[in-house]
Amino acid sequence: MDAAKLAEALTAQSLFADCEEAELSDIIARGQVRAFKPGQMLMSQGEQGSTLFIVLKGLARVSMVAANGREIILDYAEPGHVLGEIAFLDGGERSATVEVIDPIEALVLTRGAFSDIIEKHKGLALRLLKAMARRLRQNNAVIEADRAYTSGPRLARFLLRLMMGDGAGNENQLKIALSQGELGNFAGMSREQINRQLSAWAENGMVGLKGGRVTILDRDALIDVAEAW
Image (cartoon, rainbow, N blue to C red; front, side, top):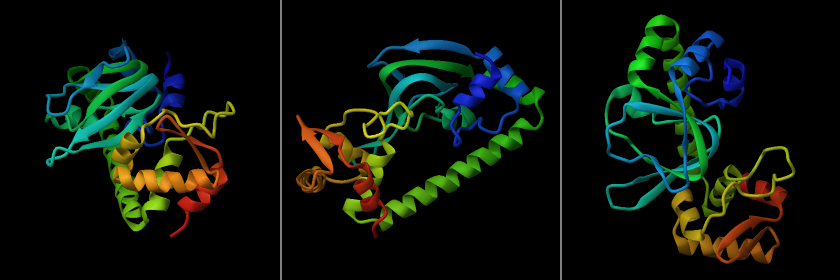
């Protein structure tokens, strides 16, 4: 992998999205590509974190356990996602658990190697601060919007976040087959709410339900619901 390919793989919200080619080249040179099997944990909530992961291939589930013991699914990490940056940067505990779903290939960077890169590239630290501020702003906007939506539009928004967008004719498929319980953990809704809403959509031909799994049948209708207030 070279800097151009890494830049192309990084998502717009990535911590390294604004990095220059020379900086990405050093990140590649100082990092190590590692493979992880389904079921492996890239990191666990509460442990000390001194490494950062840039996902190159595969899919991982990012979750945390709240103070009341409830599991909250934060995201599903795809190629281009950066994982573990919070503990990596502040030296604290991991704020989430990341479990491999599909085989993962990731570029792993240690804090010591990253400190050397920061020292070499003087403008990198400021770009990282801007990237963190941008992500915080976006996260605040997502939280605010989700609270403003009722359960139907809210669930539709989360389903759209999970849909494929690879340009290979899979746009109406979910990235991962989720049970209704897991979908509820992701959308912050009860299983009863999820079941009631999905059943109504299934009757209208918007989604398909089989074996507790959800498939999208009418993406345009789902978009209409997601945009409704």
